[in-house]
Image 1 (cartoon, rainbow, N blue to C red):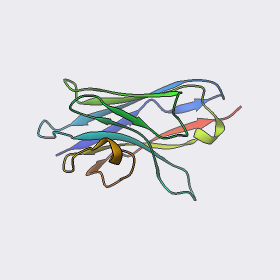
Image 2: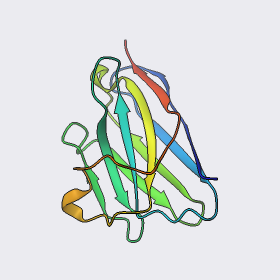
Image 3: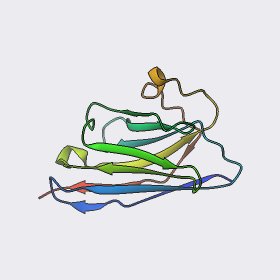
Length: 128
């Protein structure tokens, strides 16, 4: 059974940094793309970043571009998200998601959210 577990969230001040981790259990899971999403109550879920599993190609939402880095460790079946210069607007529950069906074309990596597996989420709160 495939399970995704996020960690690394917490309470931070504006300008701080966080490193979110996602570990994937289940050796049969062979992802094509992994992504990080976030959601705030009352707002729609939005994609933050995605990484193509095969070659590490990345894509970022405009809201975090330039201050975020997504990466993956294929040997450990893990994906990470570094968030820098955090803003109050970054406050949300961050979800790790994995997809193993559709082909992650670069132009579609930020355009679709139909990932096969989702974690429970980790809370990130940015406040002074």
